[in-house]
Length: 133
Image (cartoon, rainbow, N blue to C red; front, side, top):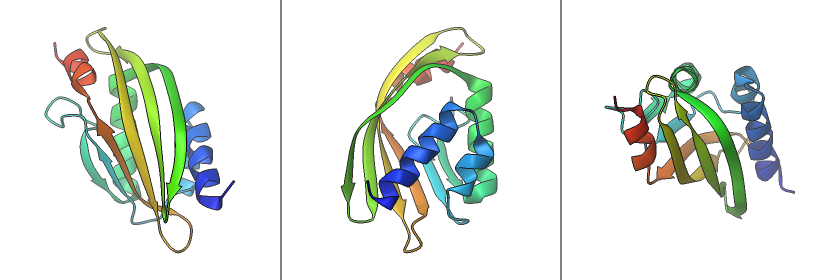
């Protein structure tokens, strides 16, 4: 297993345990996160720059969604990137509505072997709809 793939898998292990400091320890200082959910509906949607904003991303995610299933799969590498699919199911906390999304996550690494960019793209319609009252 490459160092890049190992880092991504460590980040997912931290996410599964709710270990945000563990996630941050595996990211470059100047990391950028992009989540394709509609930022007008999802407070964790859009772009987040730097570790402090990434903390805001995870805080908003935790306050908005209860995850019932999170399964990364189909890992592959392309140069300085690790790409994988994720099945994410859960419930919007404020509405009680369920959601189910399949997304593609792309992790881009710097020369030091740390992620400098994460992008989550896909059809977020189910999640956006669940967040609406």
